[in-house]
Length: 323
Image 1 (spheres, one colour):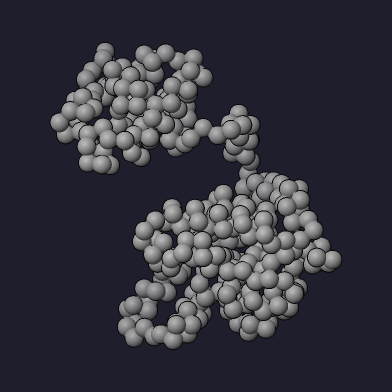
Image 2 (image 1 turned 60 degrees about the horizontal axis):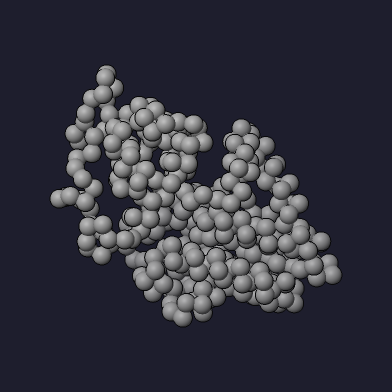
């Protein structure tokens, strides 16, 4: 990558005009065509200008601190320059910001949000857990007041779709499976949703359907998809609107249940080992998120009836009485 020197500090010099030969093609296959890449450059430009202005830095000062040439920085602030990850990090460091913040859309009430984030960053892990519980106790009580919403989380094989209807019947309330609501909303199968719209499209539908369940059902047992915990905004809505229970079990038990549901077998020991390893990795990656649920239950050695009985014992009286 060509570099120019200003004094003794190395600065980045762009290889050529932004729309010259070798420039990346737009989404429509033309140089400079509008699309997500142009929107991202415009967002970056706005965030850099805003951050620089907030810090009272001139463009020349920012160029000097980041080691990016003044001319190229001007292009970045016009939304015409593409930054590598290395240059993005250098720019963020010069502005004393986390790099992702330069690519995040400005939020309403951003001053309050920024102060809260900094306050939470200074807290120890144990304090964070206490703060989260107290906040949720304060605000989620309002969301659930007068109703009874229970959500079952966990990966496939944990028993959500089997236990959920029986729990709902025992409590005399409706049962809803979130994936079925997503399929109904989209009008196509889950596999087609992922194929046509990708993971982001599915997650947007998931959030929309969860919001509708919260609006339409003051009393419900909800079975969620296993990956809902990986979407912070959606998971926060779930935790604040439902009494959530994480159903889990040993990987080999979960694997066996999934195979039994589909009346399938994996003859190859290698494939079976890989499947078990995949389940174990997924459980480990999501464990801390699942543990944020209000209650957890290991279903490995329990029958369906025993799981329902155990769940009834875990739902607080305040959630069921008079609901």
